[in-house]
Length: 247
Image (tube, rainbow, N blue to C red):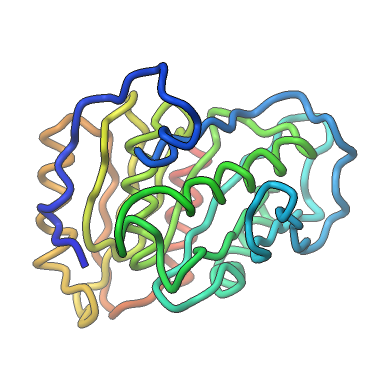
């Protein structure tokens, strides 16, 4: 695994790069647009992305509280190593229902996210396909479009969020371990939470090193330490949603 210091921001890649090359730099091309397909019913949907060259494994949760008269907030959720997107939904479903937020939860194409094992590529392609599919069914509010995650997923969310600041307005990172941006684009707002008793990704080696560096770089950042281990607590999720939808 990369250390918190290993992923230094690099120069922005050139705009003439092809899509496969931009995916190799962690760059997403999906953008919110007018929906071209009917909205999906309020429930949990398994998206079929095989036509886009992606293995099955992406859930879209549509809350019953979604307002049809306005664009919805959307949170892209990234799971920890060895887990699945479905493991992320239970902790966030109640707040999604309360706020009318769409939840998009893909599986990593390997045991964890691509750059943690080698380099950006196949998972970036997956995220693009998942976001494009969600945008084809729903109008999404660009000012409330977030990427978030837990553990390895938090590290990936921070990295992808910083690379794609023109897409993501907010980043929610629960117990991140490292940063690996290839560039910095715009300035998404950052929320980082970490348990002081985390034995998997110890806080002293991870968030307490990253947070000061991110603040020095100029990011608007909300940081929470809590009494607990390597978990996503209900209280922290509530705080994260209040920050996400209130800022």
